[in-house]
Length: 433
Image (cartoon, rainbow, N blue to C red):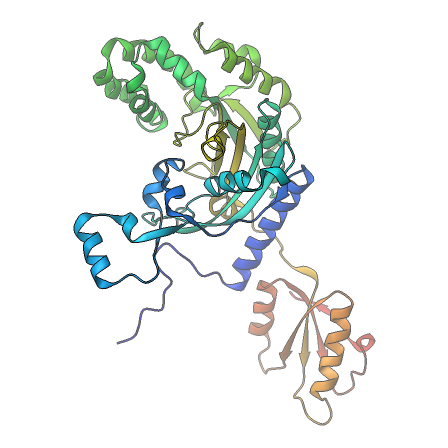
């Protein structure tokens, strides 16, 4: 019986052409982030089990992969299984996001970092997801975070850098929807929902685009009929804007959909963003969506999410999480971040000519006394020294498949090497059709 040679479920291999496309997209994102003043860091792929399961990761903690302790015996495994004590088996775990490692990193190196630290993290993470299109068990996250800035400047920088990255990738028609957790809670308080019921209410509001206003109100009637009715009136006014991408990001439009009395500080934050985000790339629009929830419970202020018409799910998001790092340091540290969902974004990047003008193929005749391996390698090394990427291929009766694969791998031209080829000046390069 043949063995299964596929990668584990939810994980993927990438052929050279796919890997090249992904790396070019990652390079583009990195260069944009660096141009906006962010510095790249790296953290281990594993963190302490207790840290990963300390409540900082929200629902993602349930999807973490744990690493068994070394030296476990059969009796240890049996005892842990009997008592359901996972901690007795694992002391480490694979990171399920890059935010928890960043919080630990900052707590470790704070004395060596600037007072306002702008971090880039681009790395794989692992979650025990139910695999489906756009959702994998191993995937790349592209995060930028600003730690130490309590002002709206952090959000403005994060949104601007992210919009620039989307533009550099060639993505158009992206919408970045923004909201503030304080506005959400203010709306629910205004409507009359009890504080302890707000998490469940937010879950229902998050379904607005799927089940509509009537569906949301039907769910929330169980949480309080009068409060649901008041919220229904507000949602009826907001829903048409949400259906078309959100409320225009101007002070007047923001105020027009909010009842009086909602947290004035949060509303002022939205107004600051409206005044500050006026010079973004043309292909990226920022709108206000007072129904935007974002699932992570650690968000404390502004939240944002990227939508694209060709994706059924968000392609990025983030927000302010001022309370997280303080749990490591014992004192509050303001922080905000934005993450591009790379696996979804890279599928949206338009196919374009990926050929590298400096990548060439040398097709050589049979290596014999008339054309030695030494001479072919000498020609290759000269081209490499000139900054070119060079692949050697032996001439075949049907060369088309060989050249087609080279083109898929990013090569742009080829030349024949024969016994008469003495130096690189004798090479006649032709474009790969």
